[in-house]
Image (cartoon, rainbow, N blue to C red; front, top):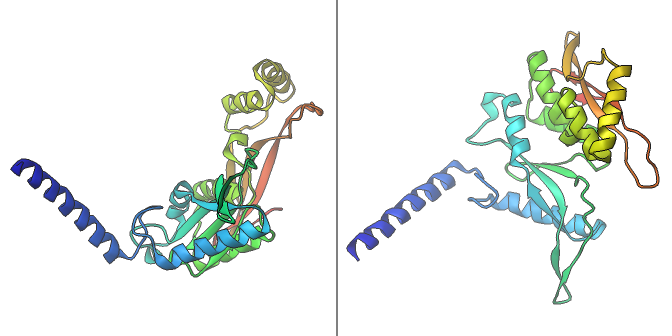
Amino acid sequence: MEFFTSHVVAKLGIFCYFLLACLASGTALGAQDCANPKLDLTVQDIEAKLSVEQHPVRLHRREDLEDWLFPFLPRNVLNLTSTIRFFEVVDRRFYVKDGEVLQQFTNDGSRGHIVAISQDGTRVYRLFGFPGAESAYNQLAHDFHIVIQDEEKAEQYGRLCAEVVYGVLPPLWIQGSGDAELAAANYFGVQKAVRWWSKYRSKYSEANLKSSARIMSKDVFQFRLPILHGSPSPLHQEEPKIEDFLLQIHKDGRVSQP
């Protein structure tokens, strides 16, 4: 009994230490850890507004996108974690209406909209899926002093922006022949993909299937990302194409399509 009590006290001590450290930092360390009240209110407000505009939704935090942005933030604006929170708008499967619990089946598997919110909850940026996503992201880049130093960083940054600003999802990215075959297989099945890939390689044997970034001018990079383009449908069996997604990236983090 004495051992059990000591073990519990030790566990509580560790938890309390973590809680106090989190509160002292003033940051939200996870979707459910020491949340910022202002940020929580902002999230709830956005969910309520979007639920009126569309149907019941919630904001699902995307820490993977936050980690992706982290290297491009100058060190003088960083705390323990990123100063930006990314969220994906997803359907709320269960919700309450007129005192009754209802269920909806509206998610078609497509990508949800993206919202970015400052860590203190005071600034909101409506990105992919919303009107003016590019302008909103460029404002974010300005507000948080994003810096792109070289071509290697521009290539990494371009992939992030392709997703959060323009909705070009990783499953469509082509980073070599293996990616092309896999994307085609997801597009219209393995057997057709093998035939399509064989025909494509014979026709475009010199095609460069790797993303890249190059210097266009003193302060601008051009980012290039091969993607599988097309929308398969049982009624429309057009073969997919590999096309270049192009993006101009400024050293101050602003982006635009040429």
